Amino acid sequence: SKLHMEGFRSLKEGEAVEFTFKKSSKGLESIRVTGPGGVFCIGSERRPKGKNLQKRRSKGDRCYNCGGLDHHAKECKLPPQPKKCHFCQSIAHMVASCPIKAQQSPSSQGKPAYFREEEEMHSSSLLPETREFHQDQKASTRDSQPRGWQL
Image (cartoon, rainbow, N blue to C red; front, side, top):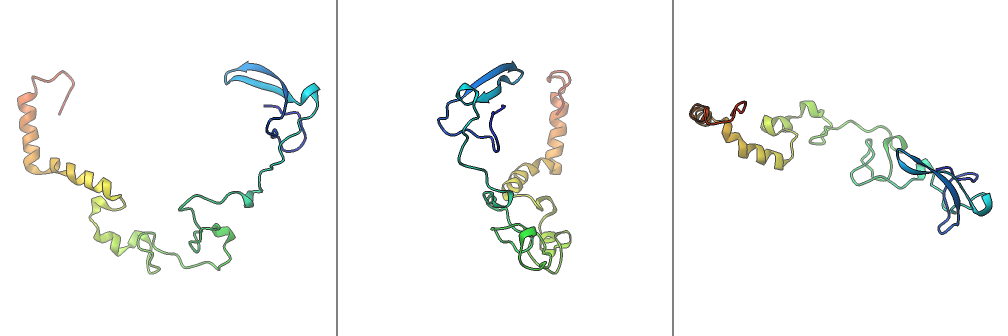
């Protein structure tokens, strides 16, 4: 919308305004918003904080250098810290060559436990005796299934 005022454009709570609008693809859209009689709007007393003073980050968002929650790496007062493995936090290696991660089963690496459990639950369909069952079932049910539907 087009607020007729100087500086930051935000209305004061309860402020009376006059406006003209048009229909657009977004619905009704104001073209010009003014105070009564076409004067400038008063505007809100509240101003947005500067970029560096904005409300701090969400949970888990932290400095990549020291791990602090109250700043980002570019604002970190510490010198660059040694790089760490993202998996076990060791400074002796990076995640790509992590021996602890390598000890886990290949199918579960990097996956949350609930995905692994679900995968293990369904992995029985990959066993040889199960595959034979599916092949037998396919042969016996081929004619009874709708066209284009395959097991």
